[in-house]
Image (cartoon, rainbow, N blue to C red; front, side, top):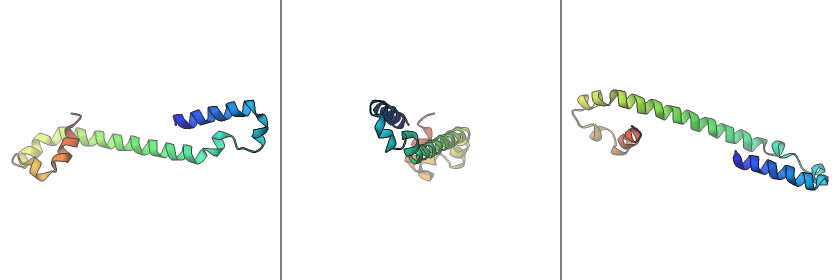
Length: 91
């Protein structure tokens, strides 16, 4: 969103120096509505994914020892090593 804020600031600066351009251009906040909406949607998706990842990490930490017992110590054979690495990288 910083880049859209920067663009709006630059647009306001340009219009203050050349007010006649305001007749032929939409204000930045109107012209960028679809971009702002899309950025907000992406931000929301990333926040939800982050919360989901945190839940998975918490549950993995909570259940890891039980899963290892049930798997007979062969968790890495049941789950991909990369998945385990991702799940435990922040624990």
